[in-house]
Image (cartoon, rainbow, N blue to C red; front, side, top):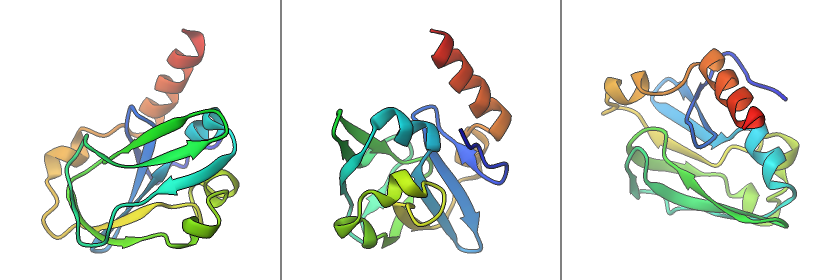
Length: 132
């Protein structure tokens, strides 16, 4: 299971990568593996505001439907339209082509970023869940 070192993570298994004036958001390798084959991704609309910790969409698999939670607050700058016709990209490449949304970060609250898990913290979370 892959946990890239350049990302931040949530306890709900979303990841965020900060790039210049955007934050790219998706679900982790662990999450996509637990969900199984993703068959549909409910995407928000561009321009919508999302708030850290609130649901902004859902991923539906052959096993279950899982809400997607915002790792940070901001305005949706872009949604991954490829997921409309190819939701399986989330399974195939969760940290690359399977990203879900990008948000503007010009008004990013640093305390939100500080509340996220670093890679080692996320790895500990996974270990705890697997041991439970």
